[in-house]
Image (cartoon, rainbow, N blue to C red; front, side):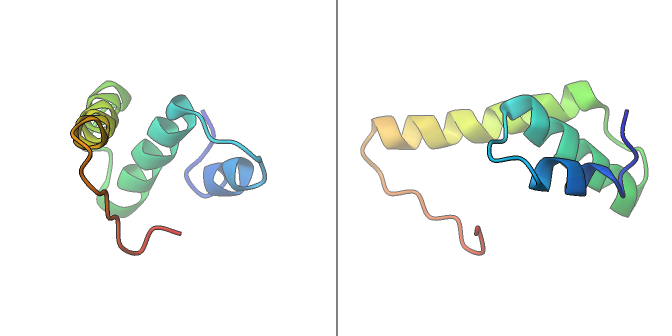
Length: 70
């Protein structure tokens, strides 16, 4: 596994980010800032729940607003 200080550069240089990349990045960021308190599997569940919430809202034709995102 890449170390937390290397992983952000590695994915930032790519033109696409997969869900697996997102899970890896979020897991590494949590480990870097708060210690290893969440497993990659649990982080994947959080990412899935977040994306499912967005998909559900879009399916109901609701607007999605994520401030500070890009």
